[in-house]
Image (tube, rainbow, N blue to C red; front, side, top):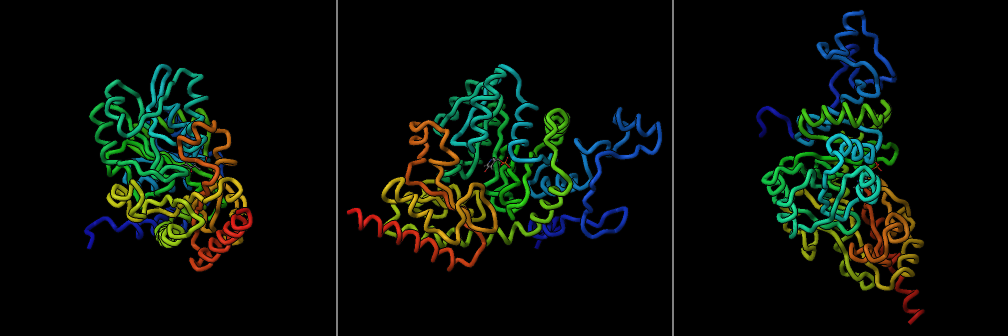
Length: 398
Ligand SMILES: *Cc1c(COP(=O)(O)O)cnc(C)c1O
């Protein structure tokens, strides 16, 4: 039994505490841009920071503040700042802590938008970045860097990064480590507990969970989050609307049970897919055949809801497979209660040069599945039918 702090699932459900003003059981949607000072002196006090309170919703809103408290709690962080999208969060963090001349080490592959933020946008402002492997990391850190950036599991090939080792090495060399925890969520992995300094999220995915809201989170030390709020949020203005903050607060209450089902369904499908003759390879950290399985077992509560497969037969097989799906929807994004499927090579990763794509393992036959919380028998039936269609085309061609 716990003594004191409640367990994660209880904290997720009890994230709303009755509104102090009205007793409303659920945090109200504070649909307001500004806040009355009450008096001349309090107004001055709010601006010289001798008084605490809300001033203007770009930098703080009570509904959004609640979301920030909940996410800090669930990630085990001192503080968090909420944003209007994952990219708003990531770009605000980088411009808040990096300066011209700084170098960023990237343990890729990264989400395409983040990759291009480092490669194209920040590079124009004199912030350079380079990709390193986990094997090269120690040497690269010793040469000096301002930030180390990673995701785990990675998109779309679901590689696993060893957070404890990476966090320790980054601290030894005084480099700020940042982990994008979108694919895992704090229910499966809490990077700060493994020695990572800052966590970022696209809340749009599992935190919201219902495919109806865009949002992002940065979580870390009070000092750093103060800086992120006063620079990244205040100057770039990527503030979430209070309705979105409400949708995230609502989504987070069911995060543990949704994740349990996502993981259960994904694990079952990965096992079935691995033995199907039309499938050349399955990428899922829960499979013993996955190179990151042992590390994943150490740092994840379960293995996530994302599965990628390589089909036999290249782009044509991928087209036949995807066009034959009826329960899975062909669309980008992930973490929705409904199952989604994408062909990274022609969609999310189409702008990545072919050589780089091949190095990343994003082949023409790769399909990424975001496994939803539907009845697994329907998902299995859908995949079996689509794989059957692939086999029929192949038999015909052969
Ligand atoms: C979707 C995603 C992002 C970007 O988030 P948005 O909410 O779309 O801006 C960043 N990182 C990862 C891992 C993602 O999946």
